[in-house]
Amino acid sequence: MNKQQSISNNPVENPEKWVDLYGDYLYGFALYRVYEATVAEDLVQETFLAALGSIKDFQRRSSIKTWLTGILKHKIIDYFRKKAREQSIDDIESNVNKLDDLFDQNGHWKIKPAKWDADPQKLYDQKEFIKIFQKCMAELPGLQASAFTLREIIGESTKKICKILDVSSTNCWVLLHRARMYLRRCLEINWFTNSNDKN
Amino acid sequence: MVSESLDRQLPMYQRIGVRIHFMMCKFCARYQEQLLFLRKTAHLYSESSEDSDTPVKLSPDVGKRIKESMVRFLEKHE
Image (tube, rainbow over all chains, first blue to last red; front, side, top):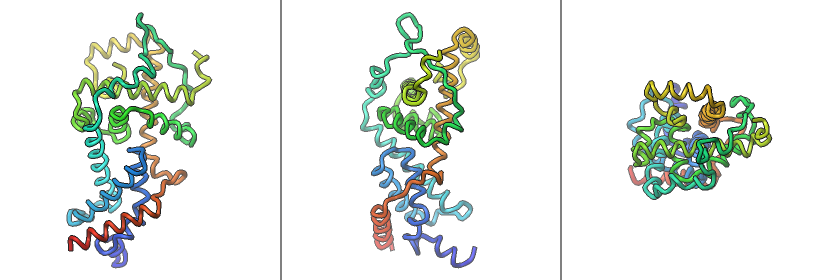
């Protein structure tokens, strides 16, 4: 690494550069996980400040970007933890009415899952589909959204998610089940619209 | 139980039960497939914030605010 590079990479000497280099990336990373612009902005700011405070811990073995992303990930998890404290466990039941249960009294499917002819990889290349996925995510009640994001987007274990959200393991399964049920149906209604008659 | 099976390995007897049930209930099997589809979608989503096709940009005002807060932080801790 030449001298020029080492100076521009050193945030203590040049914090502005840091924001220019990694600000957009970190913001995008946060926004895709917390879904609210102002929250994502605050998390990015906290990340930079935390990084400045612990610059001595930075080991050159990893890139600055990787290091900052690691700090941001912790900040995002902390955000979910704080948010969970403000949310009531009623969330677990709160979109049941909207979608109702999967089965009727006789244990038959109320609304049969429609056939989806799609490959996630190809579908994912379509911007419209991403928008619908985001819209469906945004409709999830707080705790369900947190649980699903932690599990499927951040990739935490359910054990850790129970701790972060401070819920019992049974409630954790229920949150994930409800979230998946809702998202599945939401995608079906908003994207796979014509497929209901293909049962 | 289908959702739970995505998060932990079910005991053997339940796994066999689920398999047999899927043979009789095509909608249940389809439901599971779709939950796996959802998982794959979420995974692609998690990687796509970096996607150059749909770049997300920090607004200049916020960038400025963050830079200022960093400068203040450094002044305080010098």
